[in-house]
Length: 325
Image (cartoon, rainbow, N blue to C red; front, side, top):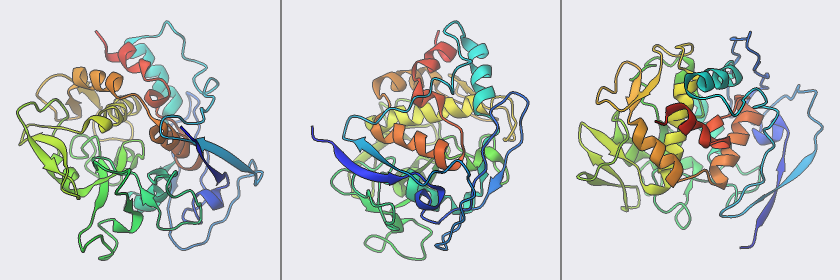
């Protein structure tokens, strides 16, 4: 398979297309719980005050199946192979806490970077790139443009908004206020097919063997829904969903940044900060491993926005070590 190469300029001014203010590095040390809140603007201006930026250009190679691997050994240097269960979860929490926080209201602008299809829209100056949408069946042949976001003042595809921001961990279950850090966390916020997002509502994730299909914007069968009970995403999104939920149950297990302490469960009570079904999520994590898009998105959030990583994208095996029987 031939690789598609593009130039990716690793400067804050370029990667944000002058669409976000300078970000400050989060502290990953155990004694820092402070977060910095940054705003994202779409005004075409940016000031870069990062002294570590050398203004260089990096070539990133991506094809359908691979991604240039990021060396994360130093990031996870405190994680030993003997750590399991809550002990592993706590050590990961120490690493990923204290990240830079952004205002929720303009995160669709950040998604112009994090959720674009970089193989189809590699130009960093492209303000209206093709997007990679969660729950959309045919991102490959029928990609949607960024300006089909539902909040863009009527700029839509066929006079219908295509996508919106999906809280994979339903915001009503643990962090109902925009002021809470978990509400704005890009590691579980995804640009998604609006129809499936609306149908999924606040239901937990599990196998909906007796459910009904939910159509995506193009009319394709996407997720399956058992109304008022649960939602099952299409196969190619199952691992993405699982790893986002693993992240949330680790980053906010102690309750800081959210209204409730978040945890995963196999019970039917997906409320009060509990979310399910963890046994199904563990299966999905193995059946749908991280692909090039998911790995690249993790890198972008770490390097250019929140300055923390989703450990379960870098190390999917951590999930079984924490929640496996």
